[in-house]
Amino acid sequence: MSMFVPSMEINSSDLKNLIQFVFKNEKILKEFGGIKITLNSQCQLALKKRQISCICSTTQIITKISKDQLIYSVEKKEHTKKYVQQQFSITNEQTFWSVLKDSQNKWAHSSISRIKNQTLFYKKFSKDTFSIHSIPKQSLLQLGGKKVLDHIVSSLTRSNGPGGIYPLSNNEHELFSLIYHHQGGPRHWIIIPAYQREHLRRIINEENPLICLEHGQLLIDPLFLDKHHIKYHKLIQYPNQFVILSAGVLSQSFTEDSSWSESISFALPS
Image 1: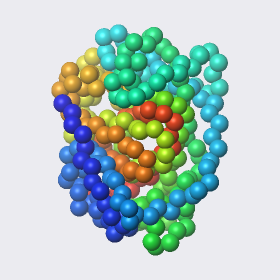
Image 2: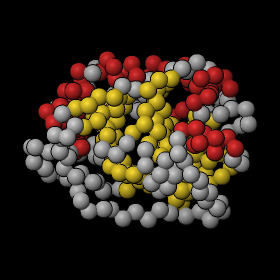
Image 3: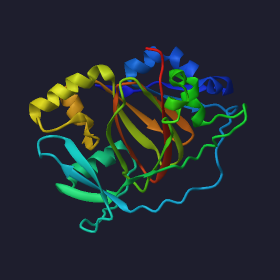
Image 4: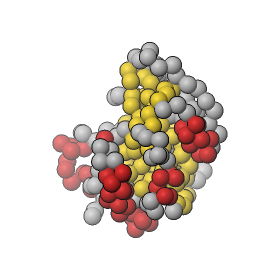
């Protein structure tokens, strides 16, 4: 029960008024839970040329919750030497899920690193270029003034190798998310719209009451969603593309290779 989310190409005018563009497409956004945005040749981004060094000292421990359920626990461990990281080649969605199904009950590989207080977008930029830092001020969050806006900062993440997992995450009910793919391998997304959330929660509670959707450490095989008729949508995000996630959605993703992404939250009129 899945299909790909809509992909929309925008020009420089749309990019400068991105929140207005998203608001115009809010009905589609809520139906699918997300949209992908590609940029035409006119669009200019206020990107830094220098790279940020990232030394990975974390490992993701992936554990099958049970043999019968296609649900995994993804736990990040700091400086762990207990597990030897497993390296594997990811070329598409099929190989990723096959590796998980055929793996041991517990295994380890390179993790996702969150780089604090860093950004690959300039915070000061010309009116002819776009920076992710302009988004909160364009949105409804501006009504909260400096006190609110100072708390809305971008999050820069790096996938440190093939199969880097972004576990199931909960988009807050009031906030939307904008995610930009800076560089690296494709990122494969599964997005569960807000209106499917309670259906999924009920199914999971019936099978295993100990599983919590919001604890940020789950990875769900789409075959589980198909089995229980949970509607979800897919997308593949490449470098220089944006993904917009609607408020209240659940989303998870993995990368084919090392990559950099940056995200920020914003609000629209309800």
